Image (tube, rainbow, N blue to C red; front, top):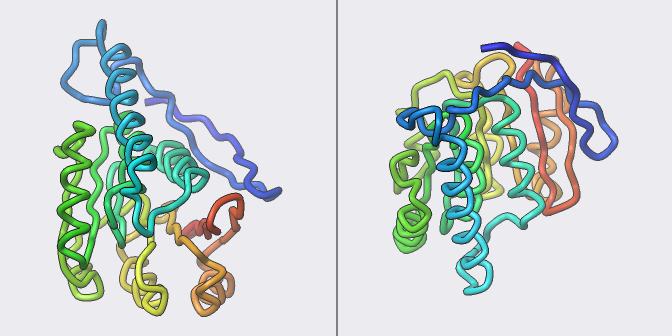
Length: 221
């Protein structure tokens, strides 16, 4: 795979990234090269249709706004992420945005949700969108269950109980590979987390504030 260096500008801050030059057949891993682009577009259209329906039918409880969903997709795909972890599935809206990127990277999403009803709704949404095979939903308290995770993690997304953000960060960081990203939503509500990711010499953090406030943290080492 050929890689090229480029730069993303988010909220006026330069974020260096390494983009992978994707071959036409990437995305499903099982399709013939001649029909892969068509199938990938069809899969993308199916996910986008579910996202749109979820918004219109008010099935996006505590979910990210569309601006942050697009940022999640962009950052996940830009880093060519294979192993993505989400803390706070809710009904699957943010997870579906991540899955749009995983179509291209052939990656997998492991997502944690403590509420049974929301986890069940998310499962149905992933199935409706045709991405259930690329997602593992783990129901229960992520503060305890993340200990079972295996690295390396390429991208971690935190959007759960705000009082637990620093604990999630401390438990996920050892598993995130160097050059990986830790993303956190609603950062205006978690000053202790902001302090943690902006005062460590091993981390570089910028803030994307178009949506609900997204901290984008690069693990340098």
